Length: 185
Image (cartoon, rainbow, N blue to C red; front, side, top):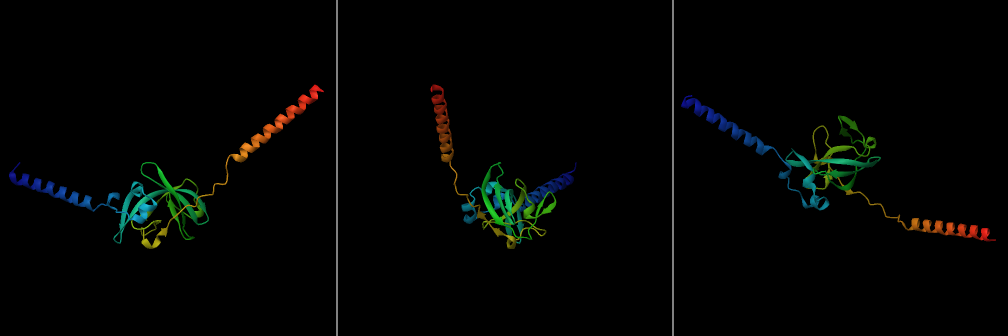
């Protein structure tokens, strides 16, 4: 092989390696997002939940998978799923009547969702909100603020059960006592 051909091949390989590095640098990852304290205060493990990053109009959005816990009308309660298999807290969002989720290529209303269904949502890096993607991608105007799911009051305790068992044992003892007295008479 001549020196000219060898130099041409070397330049081509060098050019391809530089081009591939430039393309790799333009691809955004979850490590590129700097989360606002507003987001990390609400969900400290948000970096663990990020699957991918989408950039639109100069803003970055993290794609996060969520699982539906329940729905009531247009209000969804879901949990954020981390990449390591764990999950975060429960959050509630009123999505409105025009909202549609795409699950398995099918558009579904909030009232059609069932417990356990999973879907991808997008989260802006600077506020605690969720964006369900539509045809033109995530838009900050479509963001809906999240609220923590209300905790149910703890009204039940085992004390009534203990009382019931105690009353049953008293009744059983009274019954045995009555039978014993009849047999003794």
